[in-house]
Length: 429
Image (tube, rainbow, N blue to C red; front, side, top):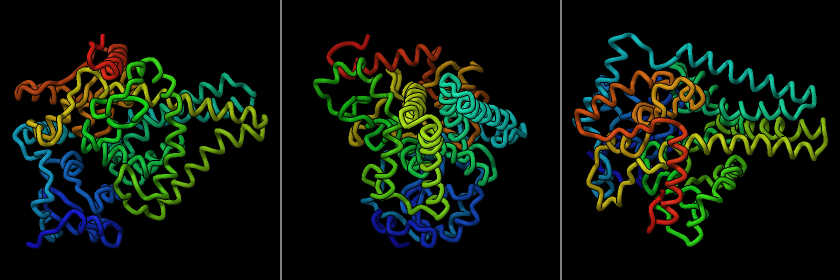
């Protein structure tokens, strides 16, 4: 078989010419794109390595021999990434147990009534309070809408972006577009979250691990600056502009065709339309409409209200799963001993408030972060059922499973982690 370099594969990333890398094999999946059961999500692997996404998205009983007819060669040995191992005993056992549990008990990982009911209620409450706020000229009602908004994004769009909401691609695309509706681009999010964070958690190519640099040191991967010793105080102010940064940074990534040094896969016509529609929609309901009704001054107030509420909501949800003292930070590739991808997903994440209906309700299942990283295509309302299987398997294989008792313990842990990272010669507490 012919051998290809990563650079050669990266030149084939369009809908008309799409290659990908799985387990060091090179596949031409162009003809498979319109037939893929998961719809357009497969294009995330265009021109790049997508082994982690393949492993975490497909059941163990999917016959990999099916891929043989699309195989055109192998990756050159000098280009092969030895950071992770996927076909390990631990992952094989865990993956089989989880998927077989759902298959044996005839439980669907998708299209859960609880998810749809939750999505309907949350989005309805957002629209209702937003319209009532405008009609009655009530800032208090608008503030309530601004609080419900990011809950919709976290609890609805997150599943859609991972293809976890439904077996129907159109439903996933619709629910996933809510991130655009609430100000951030779903197209850019896929590169940051699905391709970066989920495949390479807590490494130097994980966008979440190095975000905020050089202003804050969220991880040991960021070079220490003298002012980081105060970051556990000033970071709470910086968190307030996350949504503003995302909204405008999306334009840079879109036009530069780049995210963290990697090319974006070419957006489809629908992705281009949805990108601009999302930006326009968010601008209209957060600023333009209030400005027309109440004046530009109030338009600015409305915009900042929605942006700041979303910023804190996202910050307080996403920081407590990977940026706490309990999680593991792999050393450099040359020093890394543990290579089992599944084990590292568990070690670099942490759960909190397991078994809490309230925590799961308002976090969109992110309180089961470990299970989410292992099985991102499962609807978040199923993670409470996956968790016991994961914990039992971890116990058998002596793998640490980080579980923080409550959300307060998790956010407190984040504070102490920030303090420790800014003051590495002293203890966090």
